[in-house]
Length: 280
Length: 334
Ligand SMILES: [Zn+2]
Ligand SMILES: [Zn+2]
Image (tube, rainbow over all chains, first blue to last red; front, top):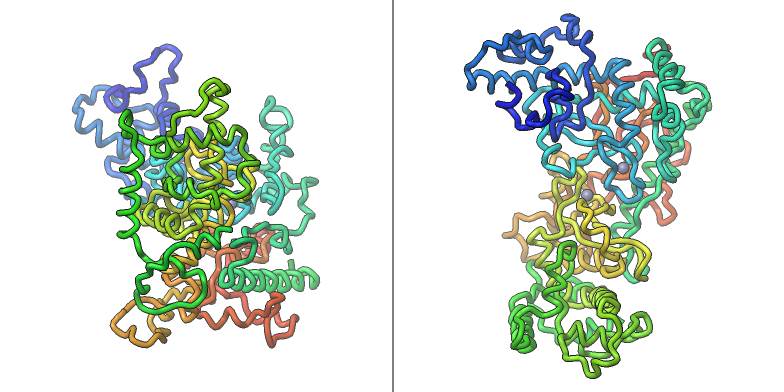
């Protein structure tokens, strides 16, 4: 069946993992997706409401969990079922990646910069996170969020540019930085993922423990890794580009930039006061 | 120097559409047609019988060289334009012969051809940096700009605004070419690695901004109203009443409506509160005031005019998104 859909499996069948999910994840263009654990999919509670979003829901679910009857020969039906299976996997994925286990999996991909790096020069190749602009499928393609400039960008490749943003959802990157405040990128200097990277890349030792701890108490991950550092005036460290003509600033742009920095300073003042009063 | 070059050019200006502007940034009208003719003749005259492709055309057609425009040979042949460059380029004479497709005078003295090629590239790049600051160069780049040959801004809310190449330094060998977006006033790494071998100095630090001063119709204005109010109310130029177009009251400023939307992070549909540790800290970088007058509320030192520095409490909403309940993880987690 997979051969009918994609020519990927023409390689050796023996060392090829036969599950639909691992096939899906290894297909070109699907690099942003992470593996949804089977027990999450098998818990029907997690799929509440999806049966109305996906046609042939039961068979699509059987397909992604490798329980589909291989007798189905109608190629046209297999083709449309494959589309529905991708939709179903995408919608489950959007829910999964904002659970604590899903967040941990996406964090590993983030540390490897699987989602690319910020094209903004002054973000110094900060790794990005996928984000949707809508949680409803077929509305907006996936975008990439930069935690340093806090802005969103279009993926460079059209392969990624055509992925449905609803498969990642609007909340995901913000949930990740909420749960892992130690991963909030600094506003200046090169990106620093080494703190956690050293544990995660080599072996499962430290990181596995950390991740298990994360499941019980997400906040604990940040302990000792800068949780005490306030982000109230972080924006002051952000660099910005200043257009110049023969060394002189461009009047109108300089004026806009002064206004923007005054807005920044006003926010910082507001937050500092809250911090002083112990509100935050 | 490039300014002098600007003044050297014959002032064959057509009046700009709409209004007349002051200032020397307006040396460049849309004289595209006259220029094209000249360029064509020039190209024809210099083509050698053996090959119809000049070194310059060949160089500009190489992968990764899409941002370059073709410098006219008469610009290169005018020594005044090259002042100071010969000390920066080894094998100057040989490189010049290569760039202009001239038979080498003394072929015995020629060093390794690849060395001359590198010199020719450096020479062309440095001349290009100067050329694109002249009227002809700006016009040539404007044509490429309108055709979208420099690409678009990767930032989602810039709505595919066209970008221009720029350098972060005018000295060669320091950094590769970047792309400047006039909507977010920021610079980006080109999307393809083929541009990683192109020196930013070949475009220089000034070009991008002189370009948008020269062609304000391509430059977004510094204010933005989501309701579109600011786009209609402020037309002040006489004799312009038939133009439904957007008019920036600052005649020297950007004359295109800005793409001004700013991203708002949300969790489960609720804005992430600025009180959260992971709350928004960078909206200011992309924010524009709704009306141009707001820009004047900040003085030259960056302070709000006529307001105490302590007056922070009243608002939370520069962005106009009022009273939506924030997602406040601080309260949520405790
Ligand atoms: Zn960024
Ligand atoms: Zn932009």
